[in-house]
Image (cartoon, rainbow, N blue to C red):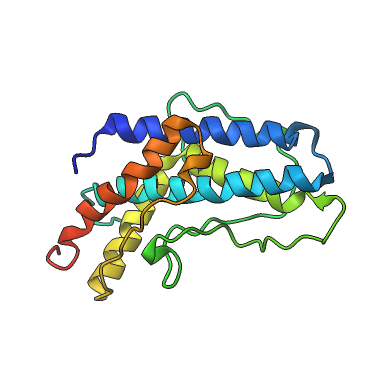
Length: 206
């Protein structure tokens, strides 16, 4: 399946738009300590799907890269923001860090749906602590702010894993796409075929 830069750029832009909507849904700018249970459930559902889409977009970018040999270099500062991406990190509340795994032995090598490293446990009733949800939003914002840099690091990880003889990953069909805005839902539906097509040379490349 043919992949265009325009498709990837459109997918990333739609993901940023949905993430912005989740930030508004949770009133993140005001940094509430708790969220209403229904609000938290909607936010978590959107974030779970969005994390999968962003992860898959980064895989798609990474699988299309031609890596140059690694050369030692001096430490550099944070990666520059992608064109058109606004730096809004100053408005984010201070919460414990959350990392979204892009590649791993159990979960991400099969590209199954998943979230970051925070468990989604909540109390049976009453307000829900907001910190975990805000941490996931911030982690996603970090990926979407510099997708090329994250995709390059992912590409090197995938190359190392491939050389170690790992079996070819399989990207499963999208689930939950019907809950998304139409344009992002189309992106989610198209991604598995595009990724699997790029993975066809997994065993023979090298």
